[in-house]
Figure 1: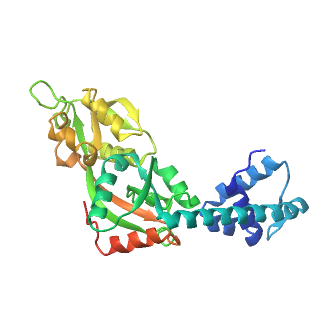
Figure 2: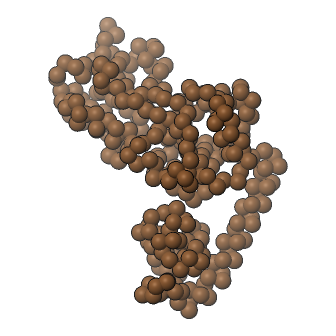
Figure 3: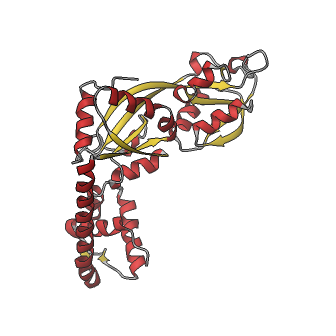
Length: 302
């Protein structure tokens, strides 16, 4: 039997609200996703726990009996976690931060160093992942903060009243390519000639932003490579394999050394905003302290 803790928490929430929609809101997931998780729990147990034909929802006899165990397990796990947090807090709280890959390697080290220079000695643990996984981690409480580019269309799928955010800085995506022996860019977006495109995977924020620009500017191109990772595209561009749009923060050293060249005018540039997200109900003292300092201007915009 393979049970996930979140399924037990979902089931307890459903029993308390007797409504799939209310329980889904309480668990910060969509109703279809919540329903799938309850069905996954039932499948793992081989039992029908919920009578879905009744409104409000009713538990079956098996569901009522299992609820006693589910509540006990959830409460015991909560106690253990709170105890471990207390022990860790005695040593100094650790901030669990999940960041987009490009920000984890470029923005994060300088930002943390600046906070510490400004008198905020944080202890941090960083995980680099895609934005979808980061959002899931914040919703599930397995991380304290998300560091990501602001996506006005998706808004990270986080309601601002529950998951407030704060502006940290700005950057931009620039079209870059390798250089020839004279240090000149191998490609020119404004020449009207077709170029090999080093593209982002479908569904990524950087990819959506780039595709919108390409449609607006009607760039003639052929996709030569595709990945979700900005650093991978940068490496491909360094090898002379095409044109890549890469966040400036991720390639400042290569631009300074002349290993990469910007190969398009300013109308090919894509502005980016960097934001930090948190769960509004977090009780972790380090989270609240950091937020107060950021709102007061400590750390400054990079």
